[in-house]
Structures are given as structure tokens and as C-alpha cells.
Length: 177
Image (cartoon, rainbow, N blue to C red; front, top):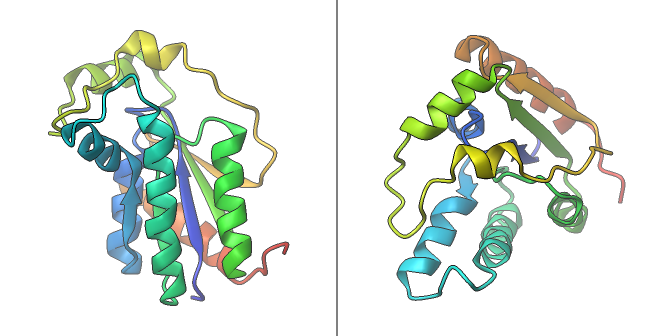
């Protein structure tokens, strides 16, 4: 497979990190996750009142840029709910002339999604887990990009196989640059 930028998308607790990590293991591709970057910023003393979310996306982009510059594929694990975030990954892919594969993960059952969110503890010191109220009312821009949408209620192995097949198809395409 040629190198590719894989941008995950989905609400917190939907299951995108699980898919990202499965893809990373099966493809031998590094994952750059925005949340641990933001948590590190907060531990460094940058207050939650500052735009740490935006800063974390920019830091993740810089890391992903370096990985692509080395000739490797990379997976970016982030919510990517709004158009400016998605444009960031389109621009990065264009700069490196690599295909971009958006993989959106949803959880088709709100009760399951809420239960996952309320019971999780990722150990990200400095970054509290979002509440169900925050997640369920989060703004989400309509998609304009082709993407694969997976429901995390499906079997993980089936989702991984579908994601691998999709990324494989996208990776042979040339990006619009």
C-alpha cells in the first residue's frame, strides 16, 4: 500500500480510537491522537480556558506532517466534527501529495454510547472525560468528503476488515492537489 493519511472522526466514546488502534496494528502505521496532546498541554500549566483543543490539533498536524515527510502513512485520531478540522487534514494530504481517507465511527445505540462514555477512564491526567450532555449536544458540520462510516456496534473484526479494505482502495487513488 502506498502511503496515506487516515483521519478518524467521531464523537467521544463512539469507538474511533479502537478502530484507529486496530488499523495501526494491522497496517504497521503510527497513530497521532489529539486528546493525549491536549492533556499534556494542560499538565504543562496551560489552562482549560485557553484554546488547547485547537493547539492540540495543530500539534498533532505537526507530528503527522513529520511522519508523512519520512515517507510513512499516519493515522490521526481526533473528533474532526467541524469543517476547519477536516480542511486541516485535506491541506496536509495535499502538501504531501498523499491520499486522504476519512473514517468516521458512530455508535448506533445512544444508550450504549452513553454507557461507554460514562464508564471510561483513559488515564489522561489533566483532561477530564466529556459528559454525555456535552457529547450529545456537540455541533457537527455536515460532511462534504467521501468517507467510510462504521458503527462500533458491529463486530470489531468486521469493522477492521472494512476499514482496511477502504483504506486500501483510497491509497491507490491520487489526491486532488
